Length: 119
Picture: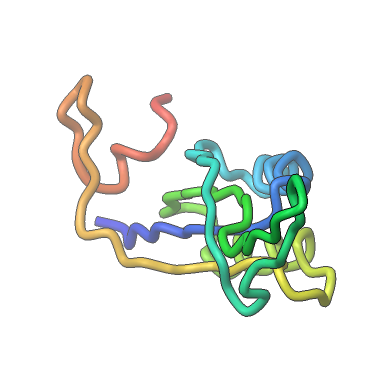
């Protein structure tokens, strides 16, 4: 069985389309995208609404979850960095996880074949 890796990419919402196109270009066939809220080094900011000051410490972001076995993990990480890096706080994070197994519900196929395109 081939090694399966899950890659979570958390970044700015305005970079989503460019990142999706770049992932498709390198052969990433599937991904899950979620809207998320969080804070990192920037710790949010303060806004004034109707004369009252509010701390906004959870900022909007997007999270792409990608599982790969054929596309090299290093290529996914390098591509994401090229697309997302602005040099400013808030560019995001990339997390890598080893996946023990995957199961395609419809067929019961397991392992790397469960995430690969059926031919």
